[in-house]
Image (cartoon, rainbow, N blue to C red; front, top):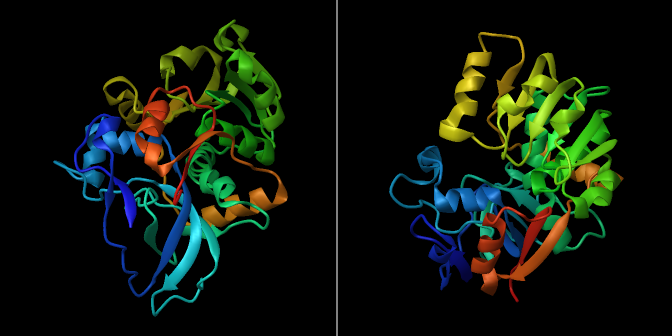
Length: 321
């Protein structure tokens, strides 16, 4: 099968196309013919190994799993002997940030993993970006206790995580202030934000106000930047570790001091959460934002674009073209 692989950490150019064997499903796994995937910050982060801690999962010296692609959409073509939840012909989407595999024509995943059936009427390209951004946003928002009436500030509201977070917060009944650039103001309003601040014209911190939660979904600012707008006992979260990993240390410190604090929850992928995201998609409460798409043959260019840090929503990879 054709796949995009990487055998060393580094720039987008370490990714290359290759022919590799089709995987064989284990007893409790399904074999999926992949029709679409994405390149996202999870993929580029593991490719660069910018944070050395990621090598504890992906391999200290070189990648253990040469095919990236944490999310995917495709068709079940074969099942292991113990599989009862899915059958050949099922159209499914999913997320796997342990073994990855979406940047190939076929992958295997446990029937109990982060997979669910594609909503009726959705194409593979539409379903592929359902899980990554929403999964991370959901884990973080739950950890912060976001619910009805929560006043939340979302910095970076147009990325895959940020745009999902706005929609999830709207579903939970939170009061949302979102930050983005001028071209995306109407988009972010349409996702459910109550107030949208254009960071190219003004600093959201200058508005003042007291927020229960500040969620930096792009990781370009620091905890200290937002202390003045957080309520006592409020929570700051970021999708990045911060300079010298400061968000981890601040989170540990916060375990002892229950005033304004930093949370850095470790996301866990569950089938229940993926099905929850599917249900939101079916109801119309969530739809991933897509920036652009590339064929698998242009995977390196897709990595370059995502790593540049200016994408809006998701970047889809079309497999099999």
